[in-house]
Image 1 (cartoon, rainbow, N blue to C red):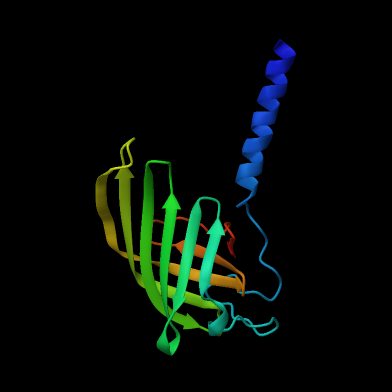
Image 2: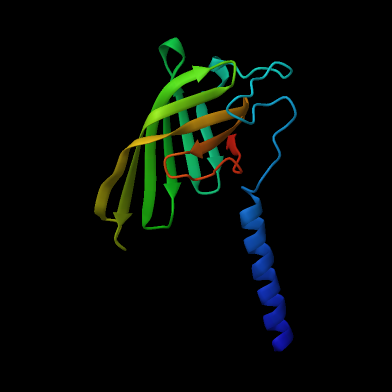
Length: 160
């Protein structure tokens, strides 16, 4: 009986580690932008036309919509549990030299539901968020929320 418990516990730990590894730290490829000052010249550029789409990492989805004059609208949906989620909206201008969208107008909202699926709370947590979306390739991006000092750069969001 103790052997079955030990094997079950070991299997549960391995599954938890696999879950965390799905959005784990990845190294920035050589030639890709990795800092505020770095620009890309040696790698294939990510063009404005390529960035639109839905990007996913774990329970988080980022939708990128492009408009005129390199304008970008970004929506983030992060399910923190089955009964609550956070949404962010922000916009900025795509910089083709750094493959980046800087924003200063981030809005974060929390929505909570009861067991029956009815919305019980929806509140705006802030309306002055700032940070950046960094495109690593035409199919990958990283998000750095500088307002909350969250370092999400270790999470790679992949276009689906």
